[in-house]
Image (cartoon, rainbow, N blue to C red; front, side, top):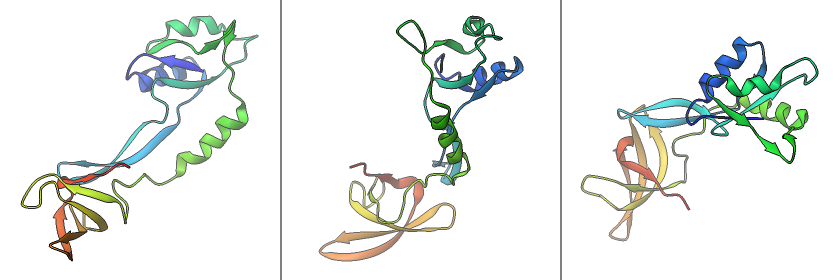
Length: 157
């Protein structure tokens, strides 16, 4: 396992591949709101870490520390930490999963602006790219409203 410099996982990955090193970076796909539209982004599952597969007999693995974007090997005791190949293979199976939704049906949300600012609601369903339906309990009655995605903030419990 390698530790990378801050926000340089992709750079280290690219440089290691140029050196014909077998390297893997697990990624997490998730939806974000950007300019009132849901977009899918990819980010490293483990910030600042890459998995490398090295033949220690035929690879000068100590020179990898000087690769652009690489900080150091993850070490415990007197050598680099070795992760079981089975664990890495199981992580690779998750690479084809669909992105994590921005907000899922039934999630608690709060409205961040407008006439209902700071009122909590329940997310019901998307309505196109930029709007969604929420269930709002207001004055002891449930109301189904359509709002802009940009004003919804998920309540993390």
